[in-house]
Length: 260
Image 1 (cartoon, one colour):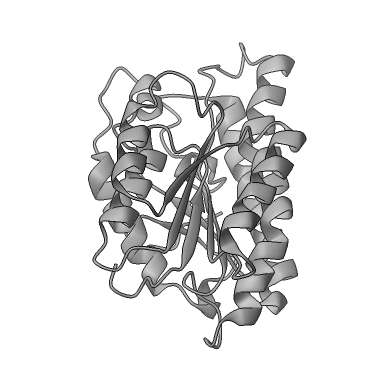
Image 2 (cartoon, helix red, strand yellow):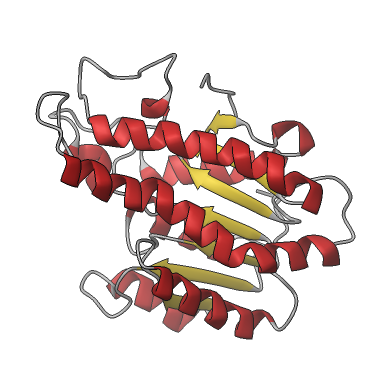
């Protein structure tokens, strides 16, 4: 992660799993960000102990309530982040929050489809819109040329399960709404790259692997093969290497470009 030089980063869905591990490893870096904003739907809810312990230990960590399905919550979170940054802008936005419903093609429902899209597609869209002014500030204030995650970037945590070419793991688990939402998130990423690249903001979709989290282990009777620590370590290394040629790309935690 030596090439990742951040003043500020925001991670959604940071209470557990990949989001929590991203926060841990960012804070544990030899050159940690000046600000790490860890957001979760209920900042005072259960299962907050690990994040709260980190906050007590690291004065540069700020826990913020942010429900990606609630526009008012998103707006309030953006305003709070802005007060901490004092005009310096936000370098890196990681849209990690997401959900899965274990439905087959026959059992999928309109309600679950709408719920998953609200979290996995509309949420990243609205969060990116709300934090766009801060990302632009960071890009404009950076001495760096080109695009990079250290300058200004939107990273959408996607899934190879949303690859239309691969349709990864179909015979193991169908998860229809989840697959469709991640395919849509990939398109959102491409659209963000086309629109925001000229503002100095890099946009990329990242597949973290099949990770040993509550979500990862829930989709199959088999345990997910990849430890969350290894997934996040790999992703942060990949983020440190991204540049203009990766704008709008779909890559995995090892840096391999994945098919749409």
